[in-house]
Image (cartoon, rainbow, N blue to C red; front, side, top):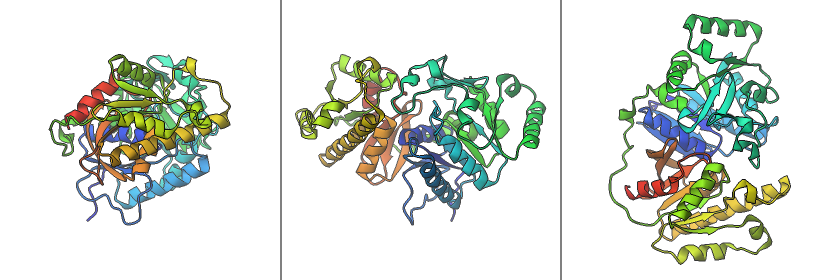
Length: 423
């Protein structure tokens, strides 16, 4: 029997996947998160209204990202997904060689539809779109701290300008005036754009949750949608009470957590400082020292072993002003070494009986769950918007929190530890 699968989503990194999975859950759809390309013979099963496939494609070459995303979407379609959703970062992708455009070009061709929307906004976390320009906490993207991202420095905040070098198709803006105006005017604009080109994109403004409900009402019937996570709950109908906790029990678990932070996002920098400032046990991992052998994995692991009853934070997070200048090749080597280290530390922790993990950073999170071989997760309650507690299907007594570097309050790590204690 085909599952009652309303939504099939592909996300370009793991924390993005857990982010949108939490919004599907919040909207009332029981959600399964699948890590990586599903193995042959793996099926979603009955009882799930949404399924999210987490890829590691955000920084992949366009050709590779297109191929992986198409395979994942075809599997979701074969599983019966009615609506397909491509989830990318709420701060989009600034690079001309970025793969959001190529992936969406290929998907529009795949479903043979004339257009889809671009909806990266996430107002609850300060990401809004106004007159086609993406803002982070009221600051245009290219003037925000995201302009210093080590792999994707954000050079523009205009979505249409960001799409132009990436896509074969034009991108139009549906601004707030039009979005909040008569539906007939919006349909007229869509018809006009259809006459101008065979395929196109519509970047939709979204500043308040009422805008999200309006967008879902107008465009929820499209076969293909794209954006951040905020729209997901509105597509489901926003029935938060129906989502529940996906079977998570309420019991106290005082076992210690291991926190692994590989993100250098400003929000994570503050979270690391808050944890240490509250007296938390923490060790800084020094990337260049790792490369030259000055700091070793064994040394880092001994620190964890020396605190068997404590929550421990291991972090490579650094404020922008403290980072040493390196060329891109060295930066990529550092990223690779850090991902491998964090993955090995997580594997040791779980093998040693630590069943609670908190991971900050999309690339770090993806590396950790791949190393652990966890291929699917039940999605539970949220620590903060877009960051749920999850239970790996292969190890149901374990709990994991995986967060995007930019998400969460300053005391996020402390909140996450308390959420894990509640089960």
